[in-house]
Image (cartoon, rainbow, N blue to C red):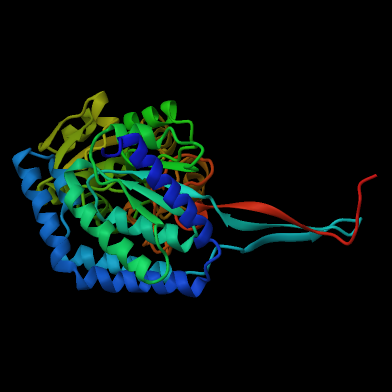
Length: 419
């Protein structure tokens, strides 16, 4: 008689927990060697990975999977090369395990400090992007954590192939069982995973706000959510127009199906007449559908009316909302009202406005004169990311190695007793 879903998830969680305890004792050289071998395996078995990916893509076409999800699903040669590079980048990072965060001596002679330790077993729930399988596995092995991966049904063949290659390579390099993959698409698997607080230490769901709120409400395990990216670029009255056009075009069109792409462009009214017509022309040339406020519509005939829903929408598509604002305060108020606290940027040559934006915009990543597209673990020098947290505890922004660690106090004495 076969295992029930509960028994299967419990077995994987137990294996990940046992592997985590061994992994935490494994040397940095062994863990790094495994990551480098995994990078080689990704390239060696590229054809096998792409064959599995093609099955998912064909299924996506038949089921009319949304274009943004299809874009994320594709494993091109470039994406596979980057996955291998992710593994190598993570291997090259300093080992976080055992890092002394601080150490001091008390008047009684006790030496008290804190050191970094793995969180334990990380459960990651995600959809569509098979490269998440690689990034999360790399970061968890480097940081000494076991991991249970549960990808979406639309990428089941791609993820299964990747997880098998990574797991077998890691085992060959002396790290067995640390990567556990849930190879069924039944939603009960998620329900079981988020209920095993005795075995799983952290849940990282990646998806819509609604999905993440559901996980937070129903899980007994701490949750770090990777939610919507309703990102803004505010073009200030003191913006360099050429720079602003370059940044806005990149933030919207370089890759539309990602959470760090611009969804709303805000423009100061003093520069709108000069900036919006030419900017809209460039967007239209790139095939972007424009939706805007009344002032924007009067400046550009190609703009459809924006609704309240548009300001709150993560399009993940070639659609952009545009609003003309009276001043800096109105721009920041709009971001606070409609944004998702992910990534927001200002384009300005005014130092005071730039510093105010950095201080007043309450987002995980706040930019001055740069595209929001850089909010990414790889681009931030973290090697990879488990997700991009829009929360404030215990980590925020791209979640790399540090976000996968906790700390413990260590105390050295020489016979002290409390009186």
